[in-house]
Image 1 (cartoon, one colour):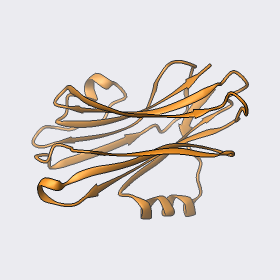
Image 2 (tube, helix red, strand yellow):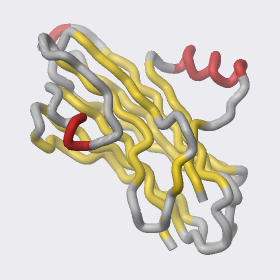
Image 3 (cartoon, rainbow, N blue to C red):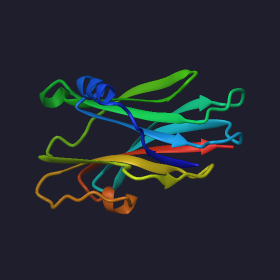
Length: 168
């Protein structure tokens, strides 16, 4: 089993760009019969401190076992001034349908820079072990750099970390 950036067409990419300022789809492939469910959730940190966990969204596969599952998220900035917030739509998609959630988060307004990184090359995925598939980090005057390591990502003023987890 492995997880990677989903192989989607240019038309699908363009459709996602219309829907959100930040959008991404990861795909777990060669899953096999052992799966019972899949989760997707988001961890929010500010200045290294845990703020909240969004989700999980859970898809049940106890009856029908998919070969491929896609995990998708869309981020959009909403409103202005003190009411400004980020709305995130995220979910799990397979051939049988989808399950989705949305949530609003208040991100640090003093930030002036943003970087996003998503999984780019295939990585092994195991049951019961969360995998980081994407991050959105924000900062002000600091030097920003993306990383695959949670400790590095949460050092920034504001960080959203996107995780998926497969269950037996």
